[in-house]
Every structure is written in structure tokens, then in C-alpha cells.
Length: 236
Image 1 (spheres, rainbow, N blue to C red):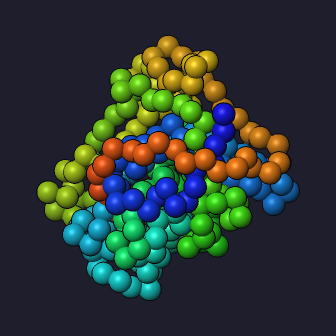
Image 2: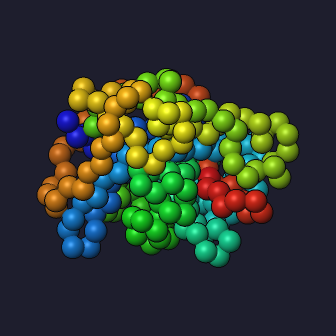
């Protein structure tokens, strides 16, 4: 069953847990012609507060980071290297700057490919993760087997120093052969497990179902966009 995740669900101060919870959920885009395209989220990173030296908010409240200080459930989209649009979901209570970078979805590994594939740009910055904005999160009841989840340090943030660069705040859905995948498998019962077959979906335009509150994730923390690392494009 498809359920839209209410944007208010993301106001809890559990950034890392929310980044983990988003794996296996679906990012849904409504195109101008009314089509809806849903892709499973396969990779995320957490950025948690001003003390996180990999987070854009480490510099405090600025014109760019102001969106991160809003209540969770809104999008933070910014341009990286003047080329890549980066999609982040702001999480946590108002005035607590944190976000989850959407690093990959099925069929589009890498944050730059995510936004290019789904036509996401800075016009969505500060809009709600809701059907009204044309971009939202859905829970299809998929549960990810632990054997298919890889947890690693975040990518390209050496500038943050050894402590923050080593935080295991990146989550990647693996294929049954243990390799990173952009096309995760789903079993008939909605559980991602080794040996399952691939599945993707593009839905025809229709009004999304009424929101239903999903189960709460395990507590943890996280932050949003990072500032211009010079290794690889990041989000925050």
C-alpha cells in the first residue's frame, strides 16, 4: 500500500535514524504533464547541526542555510560546483539545522543524477515535501533486510576533520551480490532481501492517497548540506 509520509513526521530530532529510515522509501515526482514517477531511495547521508563540521550549518545562519533552520519536512536544494543541483530533506524541529542528502534512487546513483533524472532544481528549495510541491516521500511498506544495508562514512568531506569525516552517517542499499545498487529488489511481501528480483514503478497521474503517519524511526541525529568539498559533489 502506498502512503504519503506527512511532512510533519520529519520534525523529530533524529537525523541519522531518519537517514537510515529513508532507505527503501520512494521519492515521488509529479511532472508538469501530470505523470507521477516513483523511485526507491537507495542512498542517503545525514548532516546534523552546527557542530557537524561537514554540514553547511557549521557557518551558522546565512542566506543559503536559512532553509535548514525551518521545521523538518521541507526541501533544501542548492547548486554544487556550479553544475549539480543537490536534493536534501530538512529534518528536525524549527531552529535546529539538519538535513538528509538524497544521494541515490533506483536507476540514478549519485546526487547529481537524482536531480537531473527527476527534473529537480532550486525552484523546489524551501518548498514542502508534499504533493502540493510536486515532490514528496511515500512509504510502500518495504522493509530493508540488514544484510542489504551498507553503513559507511560520508563521501568527500575530508575538510571536516578526522572526527566528523569518520562518522558512519551514509546508508547504501546493496544488491544481493553485496554491490551498491540503484535498482533494489523487492520480494512479494514488500521486504528487500537477498535473491529478490528488481522492481521499479512509474504511476499515472492521480490524486495521491491520504497521508498516513509511518512508524517512528530509531533515534539519532543528522545534518544537512555540506559546503563545497573539493572531492565529490555533496549535499547537506
